[in-house]
Amino acid sequence: MEIRGLYDVEHSGSKSRIQHELWPLDQIDAKKAKFPCCLVWTPLPVVSWLAPFIGHVGICREDGAILDFSGSNFVNLDNFAFGAAARYLQLDREQCCFPPNLSGHTCGLGYMHSEYGTALTWDDALRSSTRSFEHKTYNLFTCNCHSFVANCLNRLCYQGSMGWNMINVAALILFKGQWIDWMSIIRSFLPFTLVFCFGVILLGWPFVVGLFSFSLLLLIWYLLGTYCFKNLLEC
Image (tube, rainbow, N blue to C red; front, side):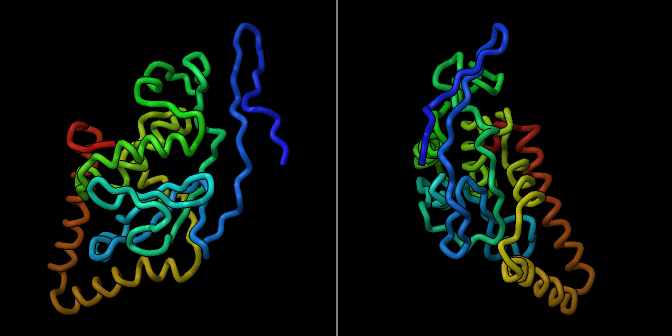
């Protein structure tokens, strides 16, 4: 394996751009639960049975090990809570900002990124977020696994943005994530389908209205907490 050096400096006119040299990644291995630089998602017990768009999300190191915030003051390592991953999305490290110093930012956010917390590597950013969330209280409604992943992406300044939050992290994995296999799809939607059918049979349309209201209220809560009352949710 040849590594040309840690950074390439390219000059263009009066500007210089520092490009981070990235180590090659291993292949994704779902059987061994190794997903290098991926977001991973799995359904939650009970909650996903009622609202299948809600699940548990984690972010993976460069070696593929999964990190997920699954309890107060606790970040899991290589032991994804709530079962095996059902969906994954591999992220492009080329779209991250790894500044060696203040003048080395490629994201255009400079001081804001430095103040939030920068990193020299992907794993370095994840370690910083892990240390931070090891002192946070877990709460499904205010500080959860999506908050942890958003914090990691903000430290990475992924896609040149520091606006990652619960909503767009969830949207990223749900709309762009890939299913691991057919069993993952069944495992994710079969409980909801059964609950829905039994609810309709036993309670009729009031159950459908109640289920829709539950999902809508959850969505409104996260939207308001994320975009209107930003101090309610943590990222």
